[in-house]
Image (cartoon, rainbow, N blue to C red; front, side):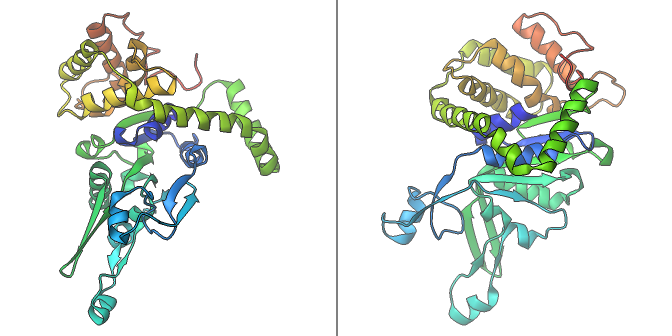
Length: 338
């Protein structure tokens, strides 16, 4: 789960993360903690869309390159389940448009989330039409609002993160396919690790400021690592032969469309950049391929095999590495097991 989130921060074009797992496993806590890891954004001070001062659209709109600059924390926007489409996409102030003859746009949550993270808890309970709107904006990077003959278009480039509990229902396969990566998280079984989590939680509750200060150095170190990875990413390469093998794995798994191929390539490059390398290795591909493909497989109700194990098995055959143990393969291994 943490790896998938970090890779999406390094390369937002991976397409977001869907995290499914048991209740009480820290899904929301981990996702909300991600915003604190990110460096501040340079934005135009009075811009409702958090656009960069170097953005040519803002320069053309204002007619000057001398724009007021402000540093802002990366936006982390929570989308409530009861949100209306107007609240998500924004709405047009018809009264002002009619009385003053100007386009008066009231930005919604998509505008607020531009260049940040949009988090949907219990995404499997969200109305399907809202999920469609979110995924379209996340894929295109733009949000278009059409109301009463007036059209407004603004940037909406964000990392879409969804979480949910499989007991409450699954997402439609065509919606699930739009998420770049899919992580499954299970309750920790190791008693020692459970005690450690309980102690850390108690320590935080007793004195949050002291707890945050204690971990600040590690947090800053991770932030620097992410910034360096973002700078290194454009120079990371992946061997042509490895790209062919990735596509062969997708083909043999009968994955619909080409999203699986694209996301696996991007995620492997982001992982190489995260570890400070400019060339993707076999190990990078092996670590991300299950996250990128497990949710794209066609589900057979009569098949008991875990999708994570199935991806690992085909990967091993195509890349010529040792086949995984069915009990400890990616996606079946209990969290905390080593």
